Each structure stands twice: as C-alpha cells, then as structure tokens.
Image 1 (cartoon, helix red, strand yellow):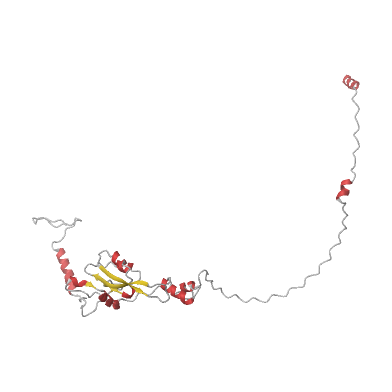
Image 2: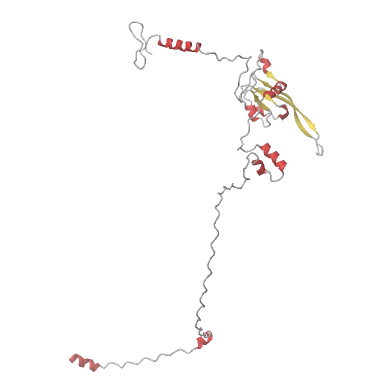
Length: 275
C-alpha cells in the first residue's frame, strides 16, 4: 500500500487501484462485531473436564514391577532428568547349583521441570515400564516440587488408557505367539499366526476357490454291438533262408574272358585315303 503525506495524495494499492482511507479498520471492526454476536465456546475448566484427544502426552507413569534397572531410559534421556538408584540381592532358586542375583529398584525420579516430553524414555524401555498418561494436573508452586519419585509416578498408572486393539489381519505379538506355542505344544507356530485370522488357511497352503456345482449329466445311451471282423487272409509261406556259412561258400558266376580285337591293318587305311 502506497500513501502520501496528506497534501493531495491518495492511497494506492500495489495493483494500482485507489483504496478508501480507513477501509482496513472497518473490516477489522466488522470481524469483532461478528464474533461478539456469537455464543462463547469457552470450556468452564476446572468445573468441566476437557476432552483430550487419544494418546495425549500429559505425564509419564511408572510400572515398578516391570523395571529391571537396565538404565536405558536414563542414558537415552537428552535432558538427563531421570535419576535411578538400585542394589543387588541374591535369589535362591530351588534345584539350581548356585544362587542368582537381581536388581532391586531403590529410586526412580523424574524432574519434570527439565523434561521436554519427547517420549524417548518410553520408546527405549524394553519391558514397558514407562507409559504416557493424559494426566496434566500436576502443577506446583515451587519448581523444586516437580521432581516426582517412583511412588508418585506409580499412582499415575491408574490413568493410563488401555492400548489400542490389534489389527485383526496383523501378525500376533511375540508374547502371544510364545504363549500359544507353549499351550499347544510342538507344531503350534502356525496356529499362533492364524489365531487372529478366523477361517485362514494354514501356512504353506493356498485357499482353494469354491467351485460351482456341476449340472447332472444324462445317462449314456447304450452302444451298438461291434460288427464281427473278417478272418485275416492266409499269408504265403516264407522261403527258408540259407545259413551264413553256406552263403559264404556258394559258388559265384564267372564272367567269360573278353575277346581280343585283331590289330588294325595299315594298308587298309591307305586304301581308304586313296579313295
């Protein structure tokens, strides 16, 4: 928008069209008046609970029974806001040659004043000990109170929504396949894969297409009896063949010697030339 200094210059837009002074102000006030006449959609929080979308990232909950103190979440956290302490204790296994050791979780704290809610700790946990929960009402008056311990994180597990249902046509999880294989005994790998697919054919076989019913065929007509065949003509007897040795000793015909031609007479040739 180009304008002047008030001395006879008019407002001209970039397109070269002349505009009316104060047009933008009138348009803005029109939007304000239109909004004032509509009903307010403000939710009366905290009297009315907000409807959060599924998989909302509110706070991280801890399932202490699943934690093995592998420290993956603390090492992968980009903000280093997870603090874990543990100790080892011996577990006597009946029938084992020696006792075993296991890690016992002593401390699991998350400082939500540093947390960036990236969810990396939840993704890298191999035993599903950390979960997202839509709980968001954990504000504090002091920033130091945002460091929550494992007891507080465990209380938020009750607000974790159930996981979405698996796809009916998808492959079963490893846990389901292992449980089905153990329950059914040997050769249950195929049954575990087809547990979610009702009516699916076993692995390695192709489903056959249903064939249409064939029409009933008419009974075949009786065939006429075959005509009697004429007896074969008697063949002439075959002459006996001579043995190989007799054939070899059989005398062969001798050809007569050729007659010797008389020598030509030289005098006869001279007489012919004289004629």
